Amino acid sequence: MTEHQITTAVLMGIAALGLLYLTMMTIVVALKGRPRGARAPAVLPPISVLKPLCGDEPHLYDNLKSYCTQDYPNFQVVFGVREAGDPAIAVVRRLIAEMPERDLALVIDGRVIGRNYKVSNLANMIGIAKHSLIIMADSDTRVAPDYLRAVATAFELKSVGAVTCLYRGTVGEGRASSLGALYLNDWYMSSVVLASTIGGLKPCFGQTMAIRRDVLDKVGGLDALKDHVADDYMLGELVKQAGHDIAIAPTMIDNVVCEADLATLFRHELRWARTLRAVRPLLYPLTLITDALPLSLIAFVASALAAEAGLLFLAAGILRVLHHSVVSWRFGGDAPYRPWLIPYRDLITMAVRLASLGGKGILWRGHRFTLKPSGQMMALD
Image (cartoon, rainbow, N blue to C red):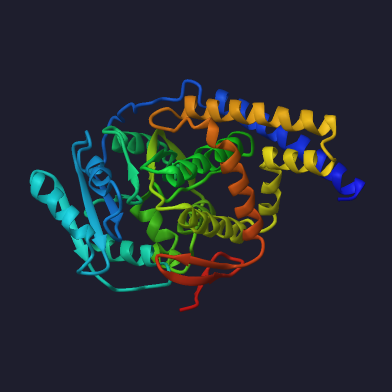
């Protein structure tokens, strides 16, 4: 590397350290005293929860059961699959048999309305949703018994058209799952807390997309999302364009991460990265600046192990461990504390970012797509 390139790497490393410190302190302040439970509103509106399913994922029974055992007076849970032979059906039927007092329903329908099969699944389910407040929640999430109360609380303001939840990655089993959970907590959710606190970001996450039915109709219904890979992002944008606010419910849910191996983890994260690049094309390349440890390592090696660059690398390592510790502390629950995985995690993160800059193709549920700049999907097979 030239002297100019080394200087650039050092400056990027310093900038990354500053951003990492700012993120860590924002998490400390923003989540301090954040309510762990929910104050029940005066009136608890009935809620329909839609759970799109595909396959018998690890921990699926426990994940789904957490939605069926809510401390809430009037709610319905609708499960949906696209194929009659889907193994998730057996799990749903077990829950229905175990809890006959609950309003649980199963929809099996292969109708496709667009390239996003999850949205097609939701569209097939929404027809039997009984209530005007609708929650769409991913299958790999697990919630506390007061989850519905927390979501209902966030709808108390009339200006709120949609509600979402912060979430933490928890580990299913295996090294790859631990690394996946660290990505969700140490980078993705940490960035969200920073952007929402300082930058006024109003996100919407697929882990919980709660919306009033009249607002959903106003923004074009699920048809408006049918070809978008980032259906949660698009829903949030449409709600804001319609003049409504997006609120974050006073609860944190668990996203149970189960990655079979490192190759599967890399493919998943590459799809997420290319999705982020598609919806935020100008801002996405700047995410490289968040990789404090790899950038400082590059500067250290490129400078022929110069003492100044070595101090930068040491500072990055210490600050990165502190950041991971703060995230595990503030996120609580089963957020993993695995500081020994940080070097592997951060190198994988940078590798994914670099790979995401070189293409538009994604692999999702066995199907290949390419992404338009708008985030719409075009099928390749």
